[in-house]
Image: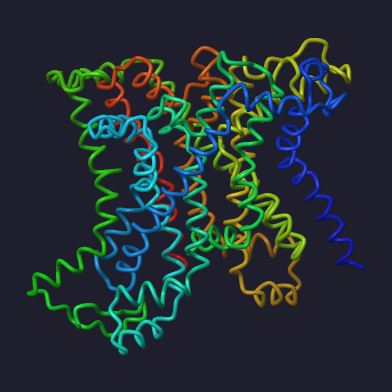
Length: 271
Length: 313
């Protein structure tokens, strides 16, 4: 009985916490179903629910185009980040190339706020003709997330039994083949988790995207949505609908991949 | 091929000596880390050198590097009360909100750990704020705090608690509070996951032994749990601190730095100077000053973290 009582208490403590974390999301859904007058009467739920905001939001701005841009840019940047960081993380940890200084420098480079790189990268993209292109964003995100991927991948690599690699080496497999054919499949959950996290980071990024893109053809979702609150329209219902449409892809990934995500974040964070 | 040698990490296994004299072999080794080196050059080395050059020259967004101006930009930035107070606010915000979020996140992780299976389910729910684009987090909380049609004002008005709507985002202190709440909502889940992982590393036997010795819940927490997770907690605080210094998106969406300059963070102030006023020379100097301040502000936490790590080993 004592454990039951204890669980009841803990459950009662957990309820408001879950409520707090669910509130903004539930309220977005409620507002997206409200007409303009309904928004102003101040009730939580719509009195006469309407779906009109959804098509209206997609018409008012190129929301679908923004989603396509964001998805394309973040997936390609995620692949680039993994391709850049997996061999290097492996080399530092197992082949003892680069050594501790490299991982230290890589990690500490993440400490500086992104505003530091904003102006220099602006000129870099301008010089290379990649300003206001999706390719430019892919390159920037792909490079910028390398420290994060490095940090997340290392614990997975570290926990892999070295004997497997040694056996592969004895069978005559070179280090590259060992990495691709032996190591990568074994730490696949870690690679997947890392890929999802860096992809979501790119999908959500706002500062660089807002400074490096300025046409509807290249704008990513956060930039597109941020314009909603400018002069275009101040319709809360449409703003909520557009926001939800943009969040949906990330939440779907989060729900289906939560097992990988939690383990990826948890292993990366605590040595 | 003995060029590549596998070595176990920390176990001190024999490391096959590398034939340093073979140039091709050394180059082959360098190729492995070349991707990260390129990434570091593009995202860190080049921006730092470029900023340094900008900070000492007359530059606009259209035409950079039009003659040297010495330390004029630095002098101007250090005499600008708006910029200095923006830096002060950023530091105060980062140090305080990170601590509050660490305490809140650790508490939630403790509850979730005790709930076992149900806790793991709740964890996946709590993951969602972390995945939400910050811009959308800002918009959701803006709808909640809005004066006309906002959730809080609507509820309070309908309940008769207030007769006039409160302008949360138009009041200097309340606006910071709104940013803090949105930040807490988004980032506490991250801390919960990391604390959850830290707590799960505590061996079960330790708690049981204390239970046998008659320690009560509070004693077990204070003398056993907390010391065991102190080192990971300090690294989580450091991580959140670094993330908090990057505050930009929430300010942009919720308040745009206002009312006046009340919620202008250092990052937002630099952004406006560079992208809106095109004064990149001055913005570069301000960025360097901010980077130095961040380094100084995080130094005590880095020291604390190192001390706790040493104590554990």
